[in-house]
Length: 151
Image 1 (cartoon, rainbow, N blue to C red):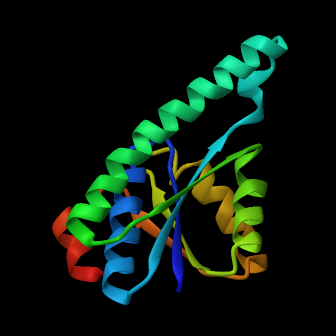
Image 2: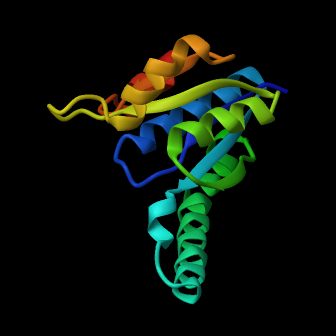
């Protein structure tokens, strides 16, 4: 089964990327893999404090994931999987793509402010030529109706 890989983070554009991935998966009989990456600099404290912070990050990710997963299951009939990795985002995304041969498309949400599409989109598009899969970039301000029409 082909899976759409989408990144779960705290950005506004994440919502449209999630919607797009779920709707495409539903229409094509695919699946969704939701990847959340915990940056390594969040735990540069004493060992005990770092462990507590790591666990709190994982709990926050699971809570955020459940909101999207419930919508995907209820509205799109797609049961997504969650993968949590720790490290720098770009190498972790590339590693996930290489480790899971079912991933067929990386879906990213583009920011809409004047600073550009966001660091993730900027960095991943620089790596696009060496990726074994295509990248779909979803505009962050695209309406739900327009997303439904194109998926």
